[in-house]
Length: 338
View 1 (spheres, helix red, strand yellow):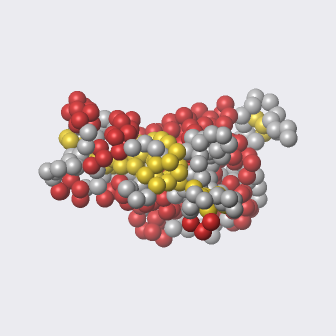
View 2 (cartoon, helix red, strand yellow):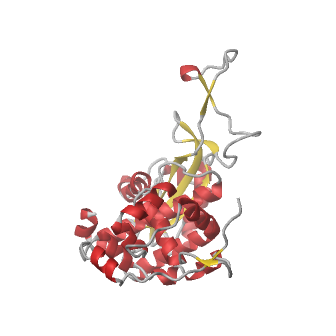
View 3 (tube, one colour):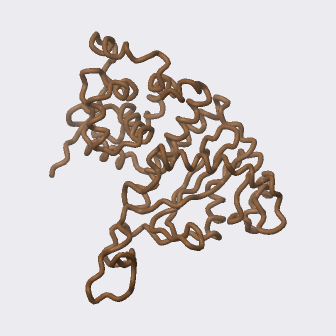
């Protein structure tokens, strides 16, 4: 199918009579109004104009598409659900910047825009939003907590056995082998959540500011990263602005202790033996942020296939979790009501 070439359009004014009448029933302190005012969206989207061709018919501007991508994860909606919701939900239209009588993009347009932006620019957007929260005094950098969690791949991990198979498996099924040839997601790998539980997928690593609960750094790796590899990834998610860092026993490795010492960061990694029990109590903030990403922001299981696309998913889910926490800090009653 031939792809429609579009050029950057301009945001349609919401000040028309129809929109003013429709949106007037949405309270002034509604969470979607507060989220719209929370950031300078046009500045954030300024580097996304090259996602559009110079010719062709005008399309939806990048700041609107960016808010649509984030809204998906704020509300945990798929591309198709988002297409339908933007027709039916006036609060969504208000937040993303559509006029009341304006149709939103279809699901394929949303998917293409996300792919065109790509992992590097979404990561840059994440960093800009973290910087804005830091400038606003939301992120204190007194203590960062680092951890990782399993993200199951968008792949069926059991296949039905043939009659002649005798290799076991529950209910007449055998474990899926993701190795070549023919893996639906060749970037996904078998990993372990603990000694008893394995999974096929990825690991989402993050650093969280202890005082605000905002995620300051995020990274996705294949699921076969061992406890020792978690320690390697620590160097990649570590934010040098942190005054102190706490992490679980998987990070109790000599290179991590040397890394923190070299950067002058207070080392609160939990020791495998003879550690300070009070450090363990400080880790709850990263567990809470992990839960928000997993349960409320579309980061529970991989929606897409491939390391880059899953990385985009977890970056957007992390941004959504940060916006929820930020709004909860500056307007807790509004966030709770939403």
